[in-house]
Amino acid sequence: MAVQTQQLGTKRSSRSGQWWKSLLWQAWLPILIVLLIWFVSPHITSIYFPAASTVVEETWNIWFPGALITELLPSIYRLAIGFGLAIVMGVALGVFLGLFRPAEVAFRPLTETARAIPGVALLPIAMMFFGTGDSMKLVMIIFISMWPIVLNTVEGVRSVDPELHKVMDSFRIKPLDRFNKVYLPAAMPQIFSGVRISLAVAVAVMIAVEMFGTPGGIGYFIRDAQQTFRIVDMWTGLLILGLFGYLLNLIFRLLEARILRWHKRMVKHVQGES
Image 1 (cartoon, rainbow, N blue to C red):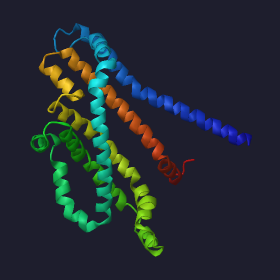
Image 2 (cartoon, rainbow, N blue to C red; image 1 turned 120 degrees about the vertical axis):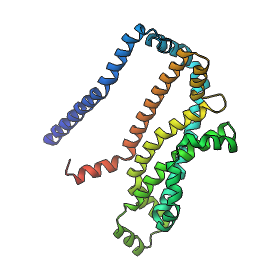
Image 3 (spheres, rainbow, N blue to C red; image 1 turned 180 degrees about the vertical axis):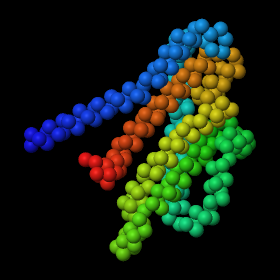
Image 4 (cartoon, rainbow, N blue to C red; image 1 turned 45 degrees about the vertical axis):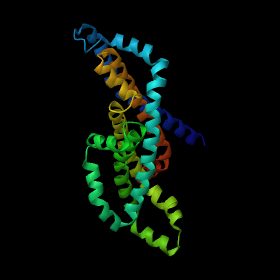
């Protein structure tokens, strides 16, 4: 018992040390860049590159709490709804195409074409059909960001062992149980890989459609500040966007680590790690 307790304490201290090392490796370069910009920017004479201290001061005055509510919240609302629907539709379509190969062959030209077309190129068409309001923005976020999820889900579903299909047929397992107990867990790591890619795509699309849509949103704020030569305001919007993207990615990584905990344990077990 004492030996097991000692081993457990050693593992915990080792994990803690690894966490600190990982944090230091991730933090040193951003800190160095921030310090470099902070001390160099006051000496730049161009009006397009204001001092970092001025940008930080104006960021506090503009965004806390005013523009966070009027500009960032609408963006978060659109991203949450659009990206959420993209996940549901992407997983559903990916499972369907992964299980029915003839359907995947028939849809392959459409999926490859839709994936290859740049999202910005579809913006004029979306504006013609849906206007410049929230409907257009949501449609663009959903349509463009769902394809990485679809393709990764297809690959994940097809990774199921063929012998497992025979076992499920032998026991006459219902389709819903097959989906919940076999296909979805098997495809989950691939799905999260697609969702991680789609998240970055969805944020980029959100900014693009807000820049050319109706007022409201951080994308519109940045473009309006640029067009009216409010250069410092524009940089504050970019700073908030960067912080928002970092926090969004951090939240997603924590969620992924929690949901896929069983998968990581299984991989460690297969690799012979304790």
